[in-house]
Length: 414
Image (cartoon, rainbow, N blue to C red):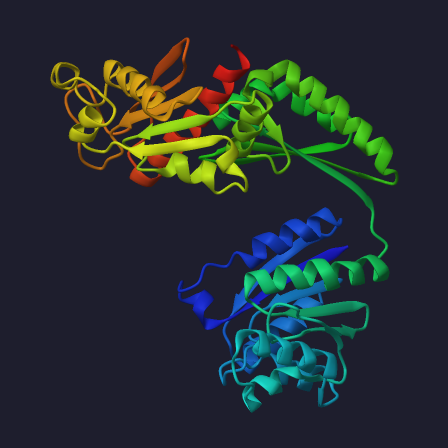
């Protein structure tokens, strides 16, 4: 089965808005067993919409489009689709009711423009929008379906999950497909690929595909198996994961949606302990990663962005002698930052980071990317030197995730 994705909006073409919808939809459609053959972004013009819809429907079993369904004059998707598929714009009362509820909840007056959002072509099957004003629409032409959804990501995602996916499952014969993502950290992609060369042959012999998905937060290894029986496919993937653990077990920190922050948080809870952080070059990013998780107050005591030497001295107790003789970006200073963090926050575990994020600040022997990262408990500490790249934003991210991975390993070995 073949699927295409169409995103509509001038704002996408000029770079004003980043298209995250296509990536999300491609992932969900491939999970269902579709082959994604084309992703296309076009302008808000009737001609462009008509040409793209006709082209993609001639090549696909299903086309998912997002955007162009707003109440303003530059949103031309709905009238264009009405012309393409026939029928006339009709009031869809369930959608109007949802729009009225939405405006009442917000304490806003309901205008005729907003009411017109509930007008949809009589030739479509509507998809209710519980989080916005534009309903979705499903059209059929021959053996192909077109699904038109709003471009607002959280509206689109909820509508796809609650309305479109059940429709697909009812109208398509879907293969059994099982996917499992193994999350790794601490090994470059090229080194990982070399290490897994034999493993890739093992997978190919069993009909399992492997994709490498690298980012500053680690490399995700996505294993996929397709067939007729899910239980058999799941067993194949379980065996494959056991093989993988034997090869790179020290680099695996979680599976599927687990992240390094969630893995660290989980481990802290298991040990009934707390964490505090002292950050210099990461500027609070480690704290952000931890506190974006619900319930993080259970395991996170607090943090300090000790960006200046004055704060390192006066708050964390780093001696002026250490700062003058070794510099802020050094092992002795990070060791002292760890001691100060444990003392100030009275936590069981601490992280401290000091580095040169760039693009300025490099000195002789300390190029941009030089970063000392330390983790500690009340009994012991571990401090290591890392050298990242020349890009400031990436250095900050890598330092933060490396610190979390160092802490996770540290907790697992003491």
